[in-house]
Image (tube, rainbow over all chains, first blue to last red):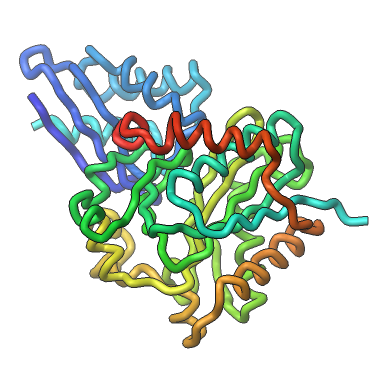
Length: 94
Length: 254
């Protein structure tokens, strides 16, 4: 299932997510995170997208996973945060 | 004696060359080959730059760009899409370890934007920094800024609008209304202003670049000395232009 979301992060930037997900398994097949936010280092976004593959579309699971990746790769987001990313992803679910 | 930084005035360039020069200066500075550098430049043909994380086709009306002869390029910095026409574009490249640059990214935005605001003040324009990356005057955006850090080096570039054709800008760009949902403005077109609009008169690129040059000198307590690109920077520029900024792989990657 192909889906998209546009989410204005409160006091932050505009997050646009394209999601390809498995409806039966309730999990992410492929994700593309775009928008006018900032992330340091920028290249970490590819890593984040890869790591999110096969993740269950459940709030706590996605939140934890993103939090762990940010910590592991020492990523600094500006204009978007873990809550925003999680919300943007779940908004794609029909 | 005041610390001397380099001032580059590279004039008009294509979108690909402009972005390649900024990256070349960053790399050269990170290798310790050149001093901290402020650069002023312009765009010919006029062009759209998009942020590192943006989807090109989501942000830009490619068909209309082609019809207008407007180029487009993906930046190495995050942030939003910008239409570059009648403006001054600046960049600053400086080591992360330089004592005048805060380690904290948001604080460094504030200081560099403060140099721009001092420059605008030199023209009699009062402005305010609005985090994350905007400078506004009379409630409207007059300057947008974007920063990256690579190889322990800071690159921030940004625009100061001299004049703006808002209709054309929003014809070329696709701006969803979600963007201004929490800003209480009915129309995204109401968000932008320019020096011409604020001062109610034309000013030249040279007047503006002189004012901004002084702004940087005041903010950082330095002297800017005119310089040129080194041979190494020229070579790096060609390489980055060829291998990155002019390629579909790079520009269409998202």
